[in-house]
Amino acid sequence: MKKDFWSKSTVAVIGGGSWGTVLAKIVAANVADVRIWVRGEDQARAMNSTRMNPSYVKEMTLPGNVHAYTDIERVFENGVQGVIWALPSKACREQAKRFAPLFRGDEIVLHATKGIEEGTMKRVSTMLAEELPVSRIGVISGPNLAGEIAKDEPAATVVASEFGEAVDAGVAWLTTPRFRVYAADDVIGIEWAGTLKNIYAIASGALEALQFGWNTRSLLITRGLAEMVRFGTAMGASEATFLGLAGVGDLFATCSSPQSRNYRVGKMLAEGVTLDVILKQLGAVAEGVRTTQIISTFSQERGIVMPITQGVSELIRGDRPARDVLRALMQRPPAADIGSEVAEFDFRKK
Image (tube, rainbow, N blue to C red; front, side, top):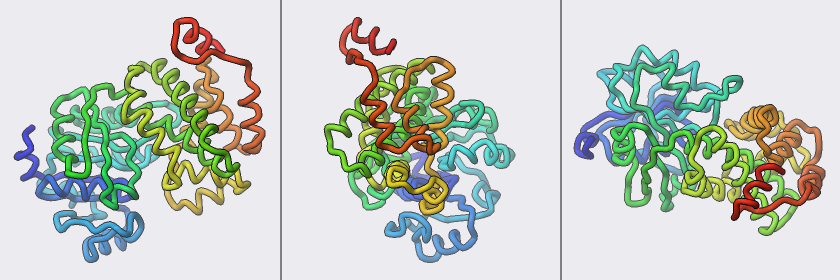
């Protein structure tokens, strides 16, 4: 679809958290009307009257063509041409079932959720395809720390879909002078990259609490990337995807910034704060907590070697303190690095 089509169109954003609010602002620069669904009436009123979200990215001003609603019927009134889905993975299926009757079927849906469904291991695009009467579905993912983008700092993302129209729509919705969009078609790889990197963000926060430097952090990031590639390719993803913006780019950003909720979870866990207290203090979803436990169990059952993931799982469960987890990882048997057939063989076996 051409950009001039979207300039006259209406796009719904489902979810008024930090990233949903930032996406609403970005999209508003390229379409006629943006309708954002939020849960709280007070939040909606404040966003419409003050042009600011009182709960998230409070320093960012929303354009006049962004309107917030708690009534989902109002969001879809007279139809929308596009939908950006920005809800936590835990709420995806339930809300998709609830909102499905409001879809005509010709909408383009792009989700911006980095997580999976507990129990089924299904990716968000799969859940949406099963519950919504639409076919053109895609994903938005990359090194997208909402707080930085809210300040209009230069950044980029990846839009991936099996449908060229969905990718074209994402480029048209999201491209601004300060936000660049790259296209892709490996939906499996893009979604798994965005999901898995949260595990290593927790580990990186723990390293910060232990006051280790960049040698240790680079060890985590590179071996974490190896685990992501190992798992992702086992799930049908392209290895090359993990070397791109939505793979190593997102991994580096999330493992390096205290803005990441998962990073803060790891830091506080290593400092001895209990998980219940941490989650209450965050006041927002840290997808990596659920993801770590799910992937840890799944990888053990399938024989996919992911020692860092197992260690982070032990930290989250409270089985071992961070220093003991790190000590156990450092004492693993020697293994070859990636780079040759022999190295690859040894790497995958150990």
